Length: 467
Ligand SMILES: [Zn+2]
Image (cartoon, protein in one colour):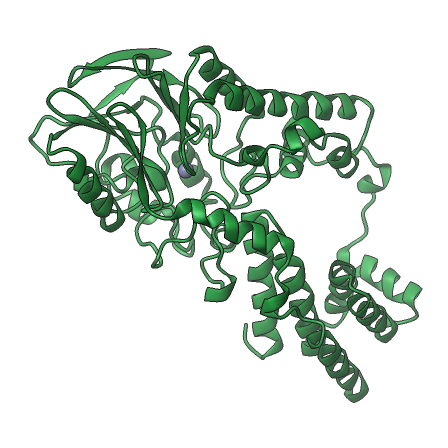
C-alpha cells in the first residue's frame, strides 16, 4: 500500500511538469477566445426597422419597428439582462411593445420577457400551440437537470477555464430561475409554479403550418419549423426578406445531440426546417444565437441544409454496410466544401455527436459487434488491461509514459483502468485530473470542453480528499 502511494505521488509530479502554462494555449482555446469577440454587446441593424441585440444575453434578441409599436422576437434569458436590451432598443424608438414572439420554449429565449411586457396593455405574446413541449417531456420523464447540463454549460468551472459554449459567452453572473440554472434543482420545481412554465406565457398560439399576421403595420409570418425543438417556429418578414430562424440556425454545427440530455432531436426535421427557410428566399438570417448573417442567407442556409443531409445520407449508407458508430464517425465526417465553413464548425453541436445520435435513434444501443452482446463488466475489462501491462503499477507507469510523450488522452484511457481497480488512489486521480485538464483545454467544442474540464476538476477535488 505504502509503495503504491509513493508511486502515485511520483507520477503526479511528473504529470504536473507537463501541464500547459497560460502562455501555451492550445489552438482550440485561441480560436474560441477569438470567436468570443463576436459576443461583445451591441445592436446590429439587420434591415430597415429590424434590429438585433447581441452579447447582452446568451441568445440573440430582436426588435422589428412598425408604425405605432414594436415587435420583440425572443426577449432572452433573464429580466436583468433583458432590461439592458430594452434600454438599448428604447434609444432607437420610443414606440410601445405591441407583440412578443417566442421562437420556442427554451428559457434562454423566453424568461427575459418581463421588461418588455406590461399586463393590460393588449400585448400579444405568440408561440406555437405545442409551446414548451421539450421541457414538458423532460419533466414527465423526471430526467431534467443534474450534472449533465451543469457540466456542459461549464457553470462550476474556474473563472480562467470558462470560455462559454461556442455560441455564447457565459453570463456575467450565475443565472437564476431559468434553463441556464446549475441543474442541481429539478427544472420542474420553479417551472411548474408558473403557468406555461415561463414568466410571461403566450397569449396567442397557432396550430397551423403558417400564421400570417399584421402587427403595428408590419406583415409577418410565423411558420412551424420543428428542428432543434418540436415547438420551434421561424418568423418570416416578406417585405424586408429577413428570417428569424430561432435555434434552427446559429453559426455552428447544429446541436442535434445536446450533451445535457434532452428530448430526442430529429436531424431529418432540422433538414426540413432549413429547406423551408431556403424556399422563402431570404436575404438575411437572424439566428437564435451568434450574429446575424447578412445578404447571404440563402447560401448559408442551403449549405447548412446540404451538410446535414450529407451527414444523414452518409450515416445511413454506412449503417447499411454494418459499420459501428465508432467507424461511422470517420465515414460521415464533413467533406472539405462544408468543413471549411466557419458557420458549420463544431462550436456548439458536433458532427460526431450527430452521427452517433442518428445511429442511436434509428438502431438503438447495439452497434453490430457480436462482442457487444457479451460484454464484460468494467472492472473485469480493467483487470485484463492491468494483467496485460504487467500489473496496476506497470499500468500507471505506462500512463506516465503516455503523458510525458505528449499523449494526455492515452494517459487518461489507461488511468481510467487504474482508478477502477484502485478507487481510493488519490495519486491516480490527481494524474487523471492533469490529463483531462489538458485534453479539455485542447478541445474545440464548447460543451465537450466544459464537460471534460468539469470532470478534471472533480478528479482534482477527489485527489485532494473532497467528494
Ligand atoms: Zn437557444
